[in-house]
Image 1 (tube, rainbow, N blue to C red):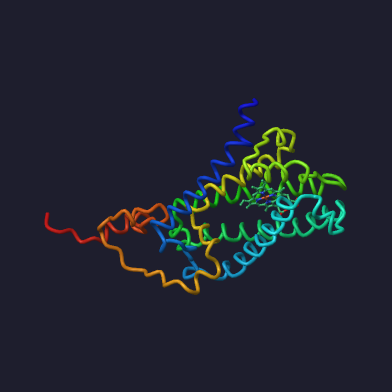
Image 2: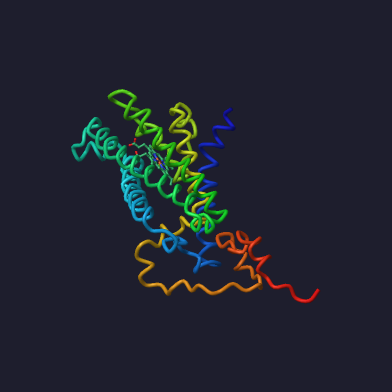
Length: 260
Ligand code: HEM
């Protein structure tokens, strides 16, 4: 059991961080023009106009909350006069509202992707993997927050005594898996799901988070060209699945037969 805990709370997070940086480097070297959201606005925009800001603005607050709760030691918030109880309320009330916005936005985006045929057909394998892992991270975070902070009594669970110092130590290679052992399972699940989505992040369209919104203004356009049958390494790139796959039946029947 000890080895398993060492793996989960020592090795796994660092494997995920390594996968993240290797992926960012690899993507930058081989696929700069695939560094995009792969926008599907052209296919459908009504549901997108509602769900996308709900999700993204919710995420902005979730990220701010994570920075506040995980990076800042208790002593800092106390030093500026925020009592532990006040911190708990500040984290829980806006945190829960942000969580609901993110989950609603995510469900809207997922619904649109499944129900709208054009959006569905433009969904690649990497998108599907991304939706599963992102959904797990969001849902587990929301479940952890609601079950322990909102409905778990007036004090909630004080992750600033366990998860936060564990994470700050982990980052500077001061690894203490034992700090995580007695954390409620909801948060354990969430931390693992969080590191998993970090590991797959650069290999999916989520990579756009690191250029939005500034990069889009100054970089050249993504140029769309018609397909041809030559397959280069670039065309086989993980994030670019040729549309032909989805239409293979159609293509076959439409292709005029030569000879025979
Ligand atoms: C990119 C990956 C992640 C996503 C998408 C994510 C998402 C969420 C969401 C939606 C919530 C509920 C809303 C909120 O309270 O802000 C949450 C809460 C939380 N997450 Fe994450 N999370 C991620 C990574 C992590 C990691 C790596 C850790 C710790 C090592 C972590 C620790 C927490 C904690 C402690 C809370 C509770 C916050 C509170 O109750 O105030 N999260 N997360």
